[in-house]
Amino acid sequence: MNTPTAITTQVVIVGGGPVGLGLAIELGQRGVRCILIERHSSPQQIPKGQNLTQRTLEHFYFWGAEPELRAARTIPRDYGIGGMTSYGTLLSGYKYDWLQRELVRPYYFTDNERLPQYATEAVLRHRLSQLQSVETFFGWSAAGIEQDADGVWVTITERNSGHRRTLRADYVVGCDGSRSLVRDAAGITQTLSDHDRLMVLLVFRSTGLHRLLERFPNKSFYNVLHPDLKGYWQFFGRVDLGTTWFFHAPVPLGTTRDNFDFRRYLYSAVGEEFDVEFEHTGFWDLRVAISDQYRIGRVFIAGDAAHGHPPYGGYGINTGLEDAANLGWKLAAALQGWAGANLLDTYGEERRPVFVSTARDFIEKAIQSDKDFLANFDPAIDRNAFEAEWQARSSGARSEVSSFEPNYEGSSIVAGPPGASCSAIGSHEFAARAGHHLAPRQLGSGRNVFEELGAGFTLLDFGAPDVAVAEIQRAAEASGVPLKLIRDASAESREFYQATLVLVRPDQFIAWTSDGEVTDAASIVRSMIGGHP
Image (cartoon, rainbow, N blue to C red; front, side, top):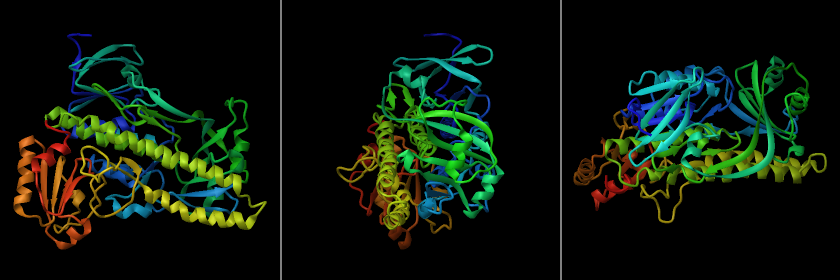
């Protein structure tokens, strides 16, 4: 496919949901020329993807969009955004706090947030409009993709007119969802784990439900465990404070909008009747889908195109945005000439096992754990045993947030411990550990280390010999690797991070640490960028 009228760019991003928008911003801020293709002219008003973690808000900070995102919040700041799990019905009296993200707040630079995905997309679109290096085609869809040794051809079609354009890029990234055209065109296969459950998504208005739930202040999402559903959740979420809600839950196979009493289903999940005005009814199949690779040649996939799972625990949008942060700096390094030969392959090497672990160790484990609990404990049969186990689950609910710490210990471009693997399971610590997220810290300058980090690599020097620091700087310069040096010789910082030298990647993960000794700076730098540039 060769046409003189093709529009040329460096990266084409297909799909302008949060992941595609985030990736475009990440690349655009790094000076990479991009074209973003999105079939919808405006964000779709379906309230999904609500929970944004502290780590995700760090991305918004670096993308220059955090204040605007906070301002777009649909629930007042003086009202909490916590979660609650209950047994049987929302109003049964058996409840405990769920997904207490505040437990890990000290390990991140920013607070978490909660707002509908369409509000998040609006903020990202506005930020993207400020970047001259990114061109957007809203209302256009990708119709065909072909790659060769030198680049990728993308054919796009305008939805309303049928007009066609041809794009030519060095790389293409598919952020185009679970039915990804990019994934299929590249020949990337998937491994599916089907739970054989049809789920309904209801969006409805109700002031009565708000009044019923005023007894649980500062809660914004609610998970009901019902014995009949064998571990699959009934899930309520606030879209705003007092009026609009969404509800996910299993329904019988073959359910349609017309053959099921959704109003009665809501009543049974809550435990009382209340006013309901439906705004949307949709269906989705409960399954876990994992692409078998995240790259073929010059084609990459990210977000739901790479991995899909039930919207349990708010992992989806947060995982996708971490894909964007990981891939963005690596694509920029490749296009700017300082990436090693293997750097782009580390995107899948790092991100795929993290999702596999997220699905296995958190989402599917939670479903099985709830199923086992509901099968073995019933307050109508043995109330004392049920309440003892319920109390134990209440205490254990804290561990899910604490143990979810995606890390790249096993990555080939971090100096992690021997035999380690990339995983979603970890521990939150302040100590600097290769492959783990950098913890925030107030420096001697009075500014937080996150406010000082460079756009490329950052070397944190907490009192290392000048010769050691100079060796790392020279090695980075020789390889063309952008490196910012931050000096803070205080003993407190050294003790906090339990290291004298800390090399931080562009995505705020730690690549390497040292007690001050540097034996082969050139090898250290080369290994952090995937070999020789």
